[in-house]
Image (cartoon, rainbow, N blue to C red; front, top):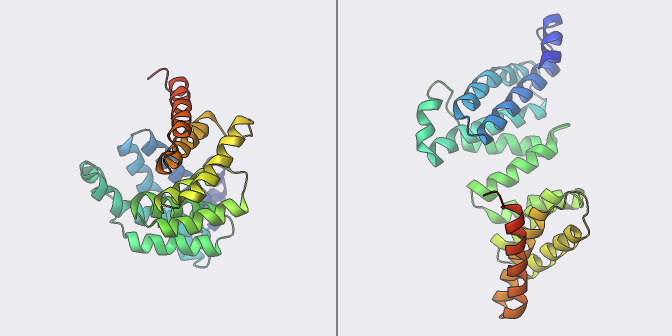
Length: 232
């Protein structure tokens, strides 16, 4: 933000500085939201939105900017519906439009130069967690996993999408691979990823009436949970 401010002091129409400053403030808002600092998150959104809107006005074919506007438009409509108690915090912000947000994120995902992967990730989360359109989420998860086969987050989302689509054969395959990587301590494949894998592998075996095998996975999941959650 400081670097962008220096650039904007020299040229108030510097589109790149607007974009990166707006994005940085947006990420501050995202962090505050995850820390349950909702008023601070809303304030960051109010501060970031005019910057990305100005950037679009100066450079309408800069599709990366749709990362910020797409996220805002989607969540500004969805969050008050999902969490009604946040409505008073959002009274001073522009209203959202989730369909427009999805269109903007899709455009950025397909045409963005810098933010394409981030947009695809957000779209996958939206379809999976909010829209409950698991088939669309799966298509995006497959794309991300094929491009970044060693990314544990994309790998885990692929498994979750197969769960939600009731494709238990692929659930067994994907989470079996994740568990194997976690046991080998491959970078990023943490005990949390291992625990999730053991749980779903247990479900797969239980569905197939392989109860002894299911119990082994559930016991291992429990052991990992006791270690991961020992302070809670």
